[in-house]
Length: 472
Image (cartoon, one colour):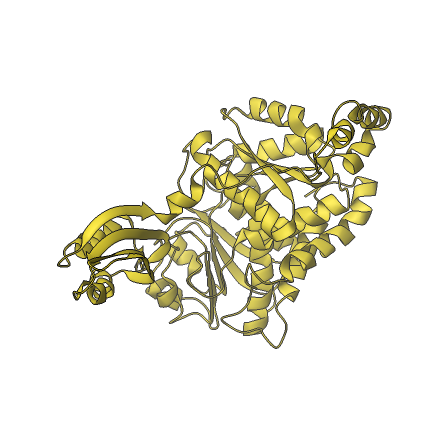
């Protein structure tokens, strides 16, 4: 069963139209939109005359076809003349979503001489004598590169670096909004591991951290591993570790709601790619013991002959009883289901076979592995990646705070202890008084999230950054 599609601001349009000033058309506009299944979010009279009114009608649709159906319905109202239809999402992206601004004034010759030549030469020479001063005297102290090859963008697949750029811009905007970090998109026109690694290596001096984004598995594992060996700044693959932090934090609180312990529950994990593998590793580090992982071929187990290195690791560390069936069988009797895979792969009957007080995290986006409404009929706690249901598990809860802590600590690595600290801090933002089936993870706009995560990472990084111990 799939999730019913409802009007969304993602498909919001503004229709500029004219109507007769004295007729009934104005009162019929909202009815026309609603009768077409849309939702009016604003209705503004922009120009008023004796004979006509110019009105902007803003409404939410389900998709582009639905938006056109709404426009057709408006056009059918007697006396209405359509002038312009604007897609508000595309308007937001016109010219890009981020920009560079100077932090210092350049109003006269003196200020120019200090910010640039000749005064800047003194700063350059100071850094040449002591390269560590770059963190103090340049943007390096607060700048992150958001690096992608466009091979696994959102749920859109391998759409390439140019098409990935709007997503990377959005990521940079989130860094600024939630952690005051200056991030910049680096979209690489190559999907060759050696070229990606070498390119990031040679641009690294200008950044205080590297955020790998939307690089497909299994290449992303090697890219991250090699860059961590080469660079003296932290390398964080958000699709892996950001997801893992958020899942562990949410699961920590969900298990508190149902009165179960992580080390005792049986977990079924759907998805053996970058996110699934990272979630599995962090769950193990936090104390999970009994996990079965499924990919599109069914349960991962030692008897399979198609295992690459990553799947072999999963087979060696999970599924102790050697279950070899499909996902539906793996879910039966499980206390927890975590999906980071594909839409609509389970139904209500499957969730009904889980243990009492089950926890379901259906995180495929925008369409989850199982309908949240259906899952709620059988599970005690349900979370998704969607913003229109309670318990949204969103990576923006993690990565801004993680990098804020890493940059503040001038960390050189990302350790597993830091990831665990971040998850623990994120879970603790939800107070015991607030905790419940519909509130296991805070809102992305909760004012304490980024600061709490940053403080935990900063404290953990204090020892790690100096000792250079092994990273996650």
